[in-house]
Image (cartoon, rainbow, N blue to C red; front, side, top):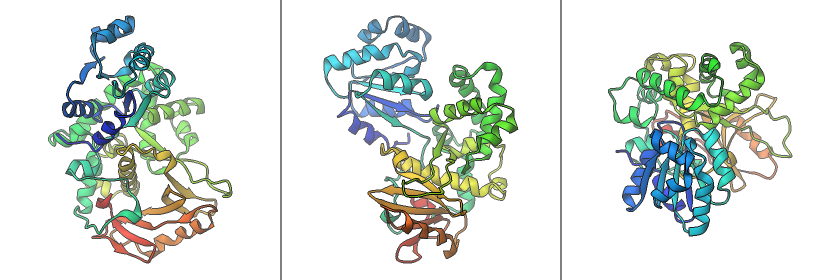
Length: 404
């Protein structure tokens, strides 16, 4: 079993909140994470609402259901019985203890709305994505920051990296190396449509929804242009907005906001879209060979998607909300920086390049940071395939992607 970095964060949250909600895309390991946590802390009961009889009882008589299953209790797939939430609130308020309920939900679009309304102030929400590279190799990791990286050597070749990009980080694909990604993700998408999407979109639109998500995958690491996607598929802008919110809410994609500050003008307003599992992005954009992907025109975008998703996971696994930390920069003068990490009044600029020696000219746009009022320039880096950590100047370094 691969130990998740997140387990220590779940332990910490359980000391301070009566309810812990673990959200994330289907099959990212939410149930396994909580069961592993339960093994380390004895006395936690478990029930799943995947069973029709239990789901029916939870919906028809939620009070009786909770009487039968004593706390501390893991309730898997809480979105199937939102009727439980008001009674969980009653129990929480009555018992006044931390770590009473641990909930999971794949349909974040519904689950989060119900949980936030019913358990406001009582629940800690944790987002779980597919496995990071650090988790796969069993290495301790921390939230990535360019000025907090020790000397590091790149262990993987570019072909090995693209092999990982092509396969992704889903736990099942990581543990069972015999499963072909196209077989796994074909089944994954069918389950995603049948169990998560039918409640959110009209069934007759499923074919167009698949085209929509495939178009989005082909545009990963790009600024989001919903108008272009909706025209290509033949849907209106309202439908495109709704479907995008489904992808975001179910943990399939993350939208990286452009940098903004009150004193900064002429900043491009579109977010950049990133798939959180590159294996799924490859499947949806019809790549079935890692070598072909490596040599393709899309290789740079997939490489950037992989690096950004690894950085996002390094923050999410520590329970840090990336919305206040990570963004990108691009202005109307076409000055662009792939990623900015904003922390404690400093901005740390990051460029992402597939090459081993991208050159100093890649740093040219870092100079815009000095003109951003109220922020100090932190150390920057180029994340790339360099053989080892290498200083470029007093403020910037080449850093191998294996260091994330």
